[in-house]
Length: 361
Image (cartoon, rainbow, N blue to C red; front, side, top):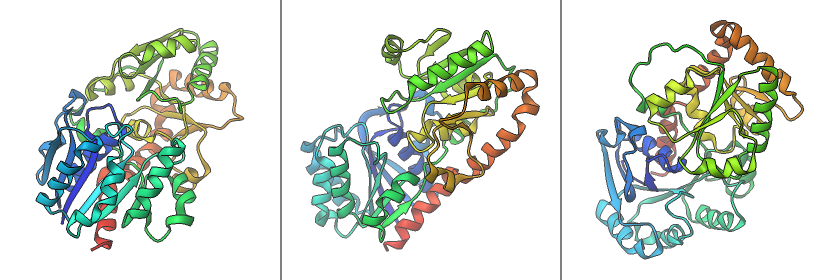
């Protein structure tokens, strides 16, 4: 089977959709012939070395861009490669406001018989115009995939016959292959990921400062693309928070595994990539606002979570136990996270994608 994936970018750490697509492509390429189309010059951030772009069966196809004017060369590439599956990830950073994805769907008669698959990312959190575009893509597609349990429940009424739920996969352990020595734990938290207005930063910083009052000397490492810290510092109390630019994976692992807790200020079902990849680290995860659809899907192996009515004292008490004896206090949580990591391994996620592709043959 020949599969052609497109996500605009190619795993350079600036778009979670593109990062997911790169590692999905690399995993699929262990069995199938896979091509990945992306914008030229948007790959090989040191965070993702060794590059899965060197995997057998995976061919990278750089494009000059993904604006509407590039529809013709994109169709020409599809005609040249003659894939069995054209799989579009939507939305992704490089598309921006381009109508190219919609134009591509409208021209699928030129795919020479290839089936059209669309993955809809973050549908429920999208702008209304994005949702309109996503619905049009879904209507044109032979199969629709969503990595969101919440979106899957919401979209079943419209697309039940071709809708598939496949969660995002954990890929940090595929890219970060160097063994790490056991690290001494510091009295610190870590958060990492792309900034977004949909992330509940007010609650995260409020929770951090509440825990800091109960555990004096507590600090936090905040790993995010350079420049994001300026906006956050303008709007929130960031005392005791050190902002660190996006790190290569070995350095990120070192920061995580010298911390007591990885803190994520959003539900498990929104902006999942960072949280899912944190499962590869030997650090307990605390998130909050877990959506009921996700609980039904992933229980009993969800990371430690605070519900809306829980007090900061609950998290602080856990932190104090971690300070007193990390290995004993963390053991149960890390065992749950290891089971969830296995369920979300990229090998299993790729196998689910292959099942969808095969069903269209």
